[in-house]
Amino acid sequence: MALQPNTPDSDDAIAEINVTPFVDVVLVLLIIFMITAGVVEFGLEIDVPRTREVATSDKDFAYVNITSKGELFFGDEPVSVYDIAALAKEKNPEQPGIYLRAHRTTPWEIVAPVIAECGVNKVNVNVVTKPLVRDPRVRR
Image (tube, rainbow, N blue to C red; front, side, top):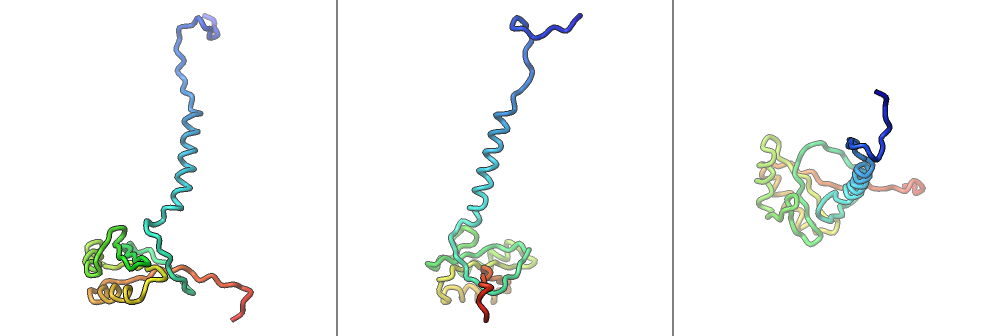
């Protein structure tokens, strides 16, 4: 029994899978995912104010977003100022808290009641800001 090369007359099926198209599709999907993951950080467009120093936090609090028009959102859902504390306590009963993201043009009259209502209900409020970019050439 000698080895015979595959000839067109052979009835044996080829049991190999060509994985090159599969790898191409996976790489394209990976590139698409990498591009869209950076774009979809949050659903709401909120430009938070800049501050000198920004502390990082690893607590798992819910986000309360205030748009420039004064609309309140608990995550992505519209909410009343009086419901925020109850929702925060429901999400994290041991240590209730929120991250407050207010647009930089939001009037203080809209932000203050949120902070006051959370304070009365013993809900920790962490204000989200961007780090202030300083020009090293300018001396203060």
